[in-house]
Amino acid sequence: MPALDAIDRKILALLQTDSRMTMQELADKVGLSVSPCHRRVKLLEERGVISRYIATVDQKSIGLHVSVFISIKLARQKEEDLNRFARAISKWDEVLECYLMTGNRDYLLRVVAADLSSYEAFLKNKLTRLDGIASIESSFALSQVKYSTALPV
Image 1 (tube, rainbow, N blue to C red):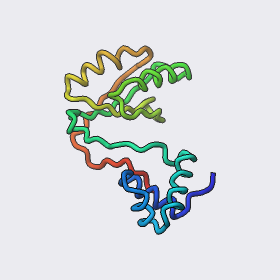
Image 2 (cartoon, helix red, strand yellow):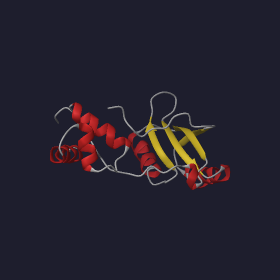
Image 3 (cartoon, helix red, strand yellow):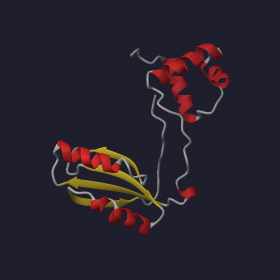
Image 4 (cartoon, rainbow, N blue to C red):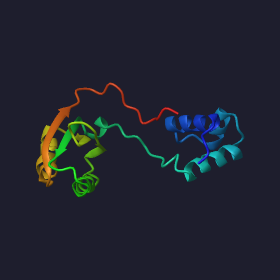
């Protein structure tokens, strides 16, 4: 895969800020005509650098006021246990992010819920029903200091 040049990086930075801008607007901002700019965007898509275009929704405006970071320790760290956990977690809409970690815990999850009772229901009806979990530690976010979906390019 060829390295990204300065124009590719500028395209990526701009699209991460506003993916709805027209190709003409994008081309003007990166100093290209529309056709070469469009070709570059298509190549970035084909190479998987641009994976999708999405709308970012404000969490609280749709009633999801609680953000929880959950540390999970599995009873065993065998591949079959890791795969079973990953398969289950990937089906749950409340889990926005899940990372396999180094250190004392095996997984770190970011979960959203409407309120504490909704989070409790998630724990009781989903997370604690998974086989192979040794411990669960929840940390509630008091406020969001920074949130970004834009990667530094």
